[in-house]
Length: 437
Image 1 (cartoon, rainbow, N blue to C red):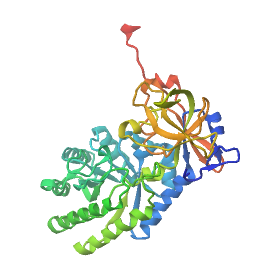
Image 2: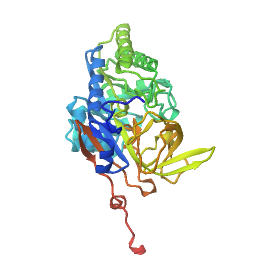
Image 3: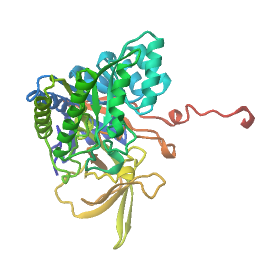
Image 4: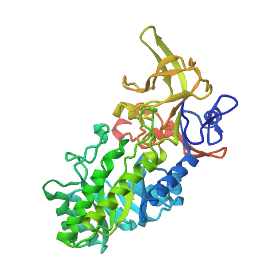
């Protein structure tokens, strides 16, 4: 099994991450437990910046916070010199609370509320990424009433369908995100910004989907966006100062996804951009990309304790763990696949086929189906790999389960960055009306 980042098998045959024994982590912090490898997160941030900068001089790496965002993660992003993409008032508040520079914030989202717009304007964020005509009008009116000139990017749906699960395709015509090129919607949106009272057009944005492992999906989007930039320059006399090509860079979850380096993405994207700039005789814009999953996905591991084991002879053997779709809904949502290991017995012989199921009261609460592992016993520790992206972010209190803790590991030290919820936390916002008392 391929181990990511600082993972290794120590002399006790235990899985170790960031110099920390998983058995010790379970004892000290309990399970389920999200474990984040700080060294790998930082290495991924740096590899993105280096790979793109090697091919293009003006690069901005924007971390997509929706993948995994806590105040500690914000500090890591800031210290590595990345900008930050937020999609809600909650994510913006997290960034503010951690002291992140507001001018390096891009505020995305297809339905920003009036309160979220006001919050972003008051905090002085760098850019709103405008997603639809209603937002354009509302943002212009709010900025005008507050006496603010706000920089914006126009999000374009470039009409490109990426080869990924249809739930996470975002660039096709029939998408809830962005202004389509169809019937000049995107072009007219740019014109609307240029004609507005308080919005300043600064560039274009697109995003074609998530967990994309086909590098050929990105160059057509870049070509399409620069063709639009050329028309904007010719007909509207406006420059695209920032070209944000979004994220969606896939990772290897199972060994079958294809192991791609950042260079595999950066070289064809930047080559296409430079060719299109020459073809359309455009001045080079700042080129921005928005990795999220690629930064944190393989840096995260979820540690569970095995409870019951149920063997249905000649049918299936179920291994039940103390978490499930409440801390990782992706298998239920997208049929996402993962690898797993018995963290307290990292032996090479894996000859028993089992299905790892969660404790939620749903038949679909299956974390890993038909995986070969050593014979598992109650009390074993099961590590599910590559859970750093969209696991903590999507965690819920389904079945009134408290959400797990998150620890950041590096150099043999583990620091708690999100406390484990208690039952008191679960009911904290419950209110019993007077008539029921």
